[in-house]
Image 1 (cartoon, rainbow, N blue to C red):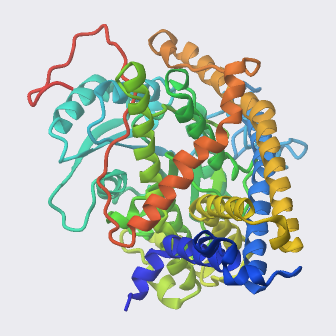
Image 2: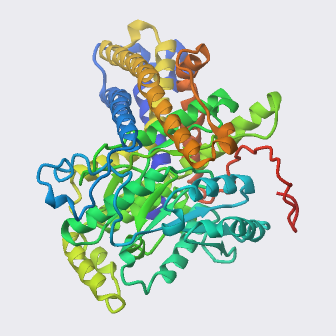
Image 3: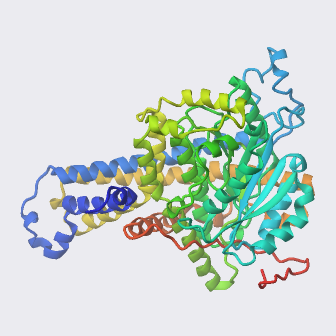
Length: 612
């Protein structure tokens, strides 16, 4: 007898099997292929569908409507995000501090219209905010980490506000040597810099981003535990290849202080930027490039241009939490079930706070590399496809978060959950009082709220929709191909025709999104990053890491039209692979995604354990 925990863990896979059973009951594909025209059910044809067919076509229509609405929502969000990024990263007149804005009743800042993006040339703000930045690394190339640190060190606030931690893995034989070298190179350019080694011997902890980040976060909690205003420590988690603009930290600093001053309470907010693959996209296989365009779009589809209390967005690669939030939810989960990493931490924080976690999208894009192979020619092409599939499988392995989310959602509103959130007020009386007030605010955790429904819908889109839509498409196509028109109910035929029209409309709206919305977004992001690189003097060092796109090139148009194939290879198939694998195990052999390696003119670094 399967245990309830196994059933919840395997929900995506069980739903796929259920859909296959429903498809056979409704369409009788196997029976038709086995018996042919002599199939017993073929002797009875009717004009009206039976129950299984009604369920099948209803589910198919629902999936197609959801898939059709996605590019419409995506186009709108990306268009608005592009404009907001351009405004937030354009120099404005000097703005007043949040303490001065009350003196000007006519200012747009007081109305909340300009505060979000008028950040440049601002007056110093109090209280002091420290950005603790965790960069997890497992067998990463030293040049990737060095480039990331160069970009961070070029920020104006790096010396005064950035406390950087290289979250290394003990399983990596070169980790300590790499970290020591990088700290020697950059420690004087940050407020502080250190590294941690996640032990390999901790039972139940899986290698990967969550374990490394969780271990490093514990060191930050210990480091700042005695700080009187440690509520102003903002902990940012980023990938080793992420390049962040200085405006990201400017914006979250301003928003954090505004959130705190609004009602003199804790800032229980998750901040997250949109992402873009704009570094080596012109050097990777086309299918890899298109897959990452769609991965980027998945995050952008949740982007909100202004902070809202009901915002639901799932972070990808980069996000920021305040240290009190990290402490209250007991840090990061580190078992194999937490391989979803960014989504898992967001879900954990959201549900442990009874759905009261604030989520704010930051109009400052995070630049990333596409997965790349070091090989050349046709074998390099296949190696790049293989590497991207392995990355996609790791992403889709995160469908374990479906069961986690349902378990957590079912416990919303329970007194045990609220009581489990505790803070030692003896260490900080003021913070303890603020937390007591916050705990009263989150005691009411209703299950059926629009925000919870929105969140569960986003999870369904990520962990069910690609596989279900693929099965609906394949089974309905086979059904129409092997059956004469007279044997198909006219209502079933009509429903499948409607699905076909919806697919065509969805394809056309995705083409619209790519050409009119994404190309604008990509250009703005590249221009903004290029301007900051030039201003900081890093442009010459990193000019080979700028990938521009020409929307009028036929090669670019080919990117647009192959997105269904790329979506199947790196979306539907890895999801099926992961969902069925979970019937036996939750463990995945963690492999770091291959990053592009630059040719260095500096001396090659030789390590004691070998060569990086």
